[in-house]
Amino acid sequence: MQSFLKVLSTMAFTEDAKRLFHGRGGYYSGSEHLCLDWFSPVLLLTSFTPLAKAELTTCHQAIATRWQECYPERPLNLVYQYRSASETVTELLEGEVPEPHIVTENGAHFLVHLLRGQNHGLFLDMANGRQWVRHHARHKKVLNLFAYTCGFSVAALQGGADEVVNMDMSKGALAIGKQNHLLNGFTAGARFLGHDIFKSWGKLKKLGPYDIIVADPPSNQKGSFVATKDYVRLIRRLPELLAKQGEVLLCLNAPELDTAFLRQQVTEAAPALSYVTRLDNPEAFNDVSAEKSLKVLHYRLSETDSGLVKPEAV
Ligand SMILES: C[S@@+](CC[C@H](N)C(=O)[O-])C[C@H]1O[C@@H](n2cnc3c(N)ncnc32)[C@H](O)[C@@H]1O
Image 1: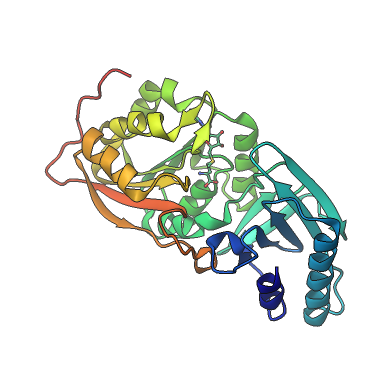
Image 2: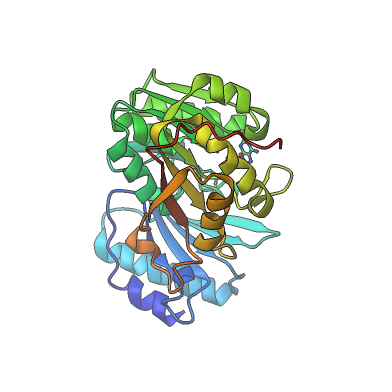
């Protein structure tokens, strides 16, 4: 854990929400299990192995010391979460968590909830994806698949999108998404459809075509989306939803599946899509193994293609 304590001793806190320490990236020997996130005004310490009491106390004290050095006048708010595949334990170690808890990123405001489960409402590693959408959305019609709390939709409207269609089967996540739009002053321009994407192709097609499609599914959500078998079913449908020269961001956050997996699926199921590039992840998420970290691939519908590739029955 020494490497975490060393980084912590010179750590600076910005205004925007961001990852401050990414042990998971493998650059800090002995601290691979630890991450520290800043959701102003709260710090979130996450461990992927259970911390012994003494270890947690050492982390807590070191964080408190650094906080005191930076902000002697401000109280520390610190949440600890231990998470594994089967268990999530969350504990408020010091201070408090505001309710509602609103954080900023690139001029946008988002609701987060650190004391409720593993997903906090804003995926910090997707910041560059949101930035890409913000930069490319002007006068565009955007489809945000697996929208969750609609971060991409807010970014698209910030960037001047004409319209965004958000779809996610979690109505609770979409309800937070609606609030995120209101927080940013967007009272129109977005639809929120609480459906299973695989049962909604007709509806999605009717509302299209789209200039930009973002697909950011879970890697393995039993009964809803399992990347190894379902990503190809999704990719096959994309060309018919796209406008001429439409653009796609395909996202994959599964360490066990690499870019080659995704590219192969596109080659097979949607050859009309041309690979453009892989977006960089935020620097804070640097990983010794780039293939294990979040993958965001940018594709464009080939100019020569009408997009009307007949999808196989699924
Ligand atoms: C990784 S999160 C999406 C994150 C989001 N794109 C963002 O940037 O914050 C995955 C989402 O997919 C949704 N989901 C999973 N399977 C689905 C399906 N078959 N149809 C619709 N939504 C689904 C979940 O409810 C969850 O909100």
